[in-house]
Length: 446
Image 1 (cartoon, rainbow, N blue to C red):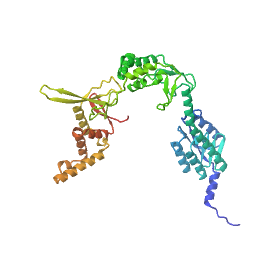
Image 2 (cartoon, rainbow, N blue to C red):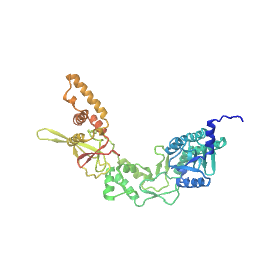
Image 3 (cartoon, rainbow, N blue to C red):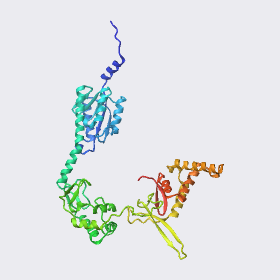
Image 4 (cartoon, rainbow, N blue to C red):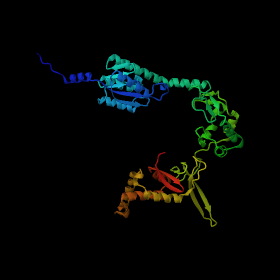
């Protein structure tokens, strides 16, 4: 009998073919509008687990993901699944439908490439099976390409739907304060009605500005003190939102969509005010600029926050003229009251503020200063300069580098320029707060 040489690679291929595939059940739910009717993740798992039991398939692991498959390589769970298949952890995938695996050409190509290389031998979906067979891979690619085509058309369909809604007189999105949606109609068909409780207050706001020359801040105080006005989420109207209301043409019946497109539509909703009232209020109301021309900038503004309400810290200077002709200048830092117009946080003088900051430099961990590398470089540069001038080490040169960093920081706080002070405090890893006239460090989580 003639001896036949056995190729080890062929033995491996035969063994892998005989062994049952090791499946990973992959369930994905996207948040995209066109997939709102897709089975939930739990439903997918139940359906495919029942199928696996019926067909005696070996599910090694179940992986879930709530992420869109529109963009290639953007799903962390799917990316890890691909890597695990390459490592041989799985040789098969079970999922509800091909579009659960991919809605883009990149991810689809990765799946087919795994099948070409023999890493992936079987894909099971509801009522379909795909193996490393030319016809089945071709069908998989067609179904994946179809899902991509639907994805590509989605943006066009959404824009067309929104445009049609605007032409019907209904502005897409949430209606402004003073209006409510019909709760009982289907999504996309909900009509807008006047909120009988809040609409009169909105109209009165416009009248206050138009006829009584109220400013935006005056309206804010009036809403808080006299009306105790709150939104449907039980929140007070922020000053910025009040100004936004005064610029919203929706209140007299017209709207632009998208904003800035110059596409104007006549709304079918009932207006709360007339166009004449809107224009008169607009003429009387000037949105205050964030910074007036010629406004003085102070050393420590824009670097600290109010520990009481979370607003920023602003400053003002005052001058005291004495009878002997001397003039003393004082700078006070206080809450800007941007988030709470009635914040009770007291002001702190600049001298006291600097004193507390210097004390803080002595106490904080030196690692708190994220720019210590740069400061070390400045210190070493000064040491080199002093050695070049005096020809020998000074007492300053003999001190530990950390002590020099602290002293350098103190020097900046007392005698540095405004930009130096801002750069130093801007390098703190924690944020600075003023609470009860004390400077504190708090975690920088905002």
